[in-house]
Length: 221
Image (cartoon, rainbow, N blue to C red):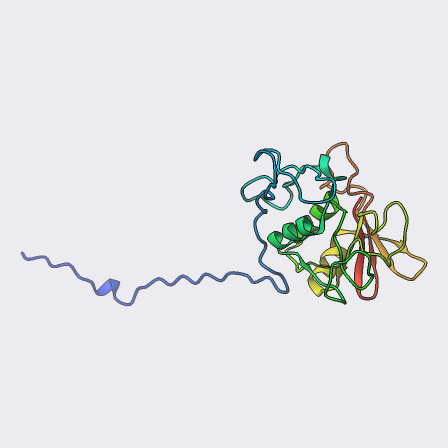
């Protein structure tokens, strides 16, 4: 007997797979960590910065990291770097800069200068960009015109960051309302049990985020 295979039972059977990727509203793509700064002098293991005093900075670690992994040496946080070097690191990390006068002269309050900013302040701003996935724009740095004090803009501890919906939501969700400043700005600080704090350190516990009308006034200490 001649047996022939029947395909009748297979007719009309098909499989469709639809993959839907979630979108991130109001978020920018997060770039990978920046490569080490180009050294003007020295060996690849000890790059130097073209800034006043030629301070030595540790190289950034190569590769792609999750947001909670640090990509810079926190022991160098108090090193000071020049505007050009700082601007290059920010550009590599996707952090923007704006100034009222479209300038970077530290002596003028309508400029946005990064001259002599703390390396730690700069890298913490880059961490914020990577951790949040939000647009981050610096509108104030070390230029004149800000309040003085030890932990001030002029001493390289503070930056002003422009408001946007994504960043505002991230800050108010991640940090805890602390109190209201004398000028009416709401202040936010990390919660006491912040799991991102390194063991035995309170490096982020002293951060203060002041919600001013046009920007966040941020202290990275």
